[in-house]
Amino acid sequence: MRAKLIVLVSLVAATLASGLSFIFARILAGYWGRLITSEVFGQRSIDLILTIVLAIITNSAASVFVYRHTARKRKTQAVITSIIGLLLSIVMLSVLGWLFPPVPLRY
Image 1 (cartoon, one colour):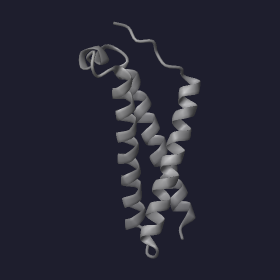
Image 2 (cartoon, helix red, strand yellow):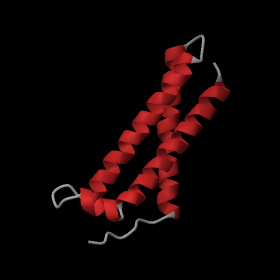
Image 3 (tube, one colour):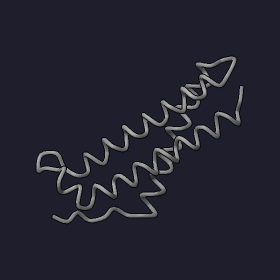
């Protein structure tokens, strides 16, 4: 098993997912958020959906990368990469949420 590849790819995917989610959440909290959101579908719902979708997309891409670059036990390594990447994404988003508290909504 290629442990270095799995750890490195999972770390890159988690960093990318949490960073993009954080940046998009901050952008949507500003001017663009007022244009997109409505009363029924609030700002925090869009942030949550965006975070989940970005985490799934980046970890899926990381799993495909590991699957294509390993010779044996491909499926196992891809699943391990996905699980580690999702756990690291949750940890990184928690740390970012702690370091940078949410911006109050302005209407």
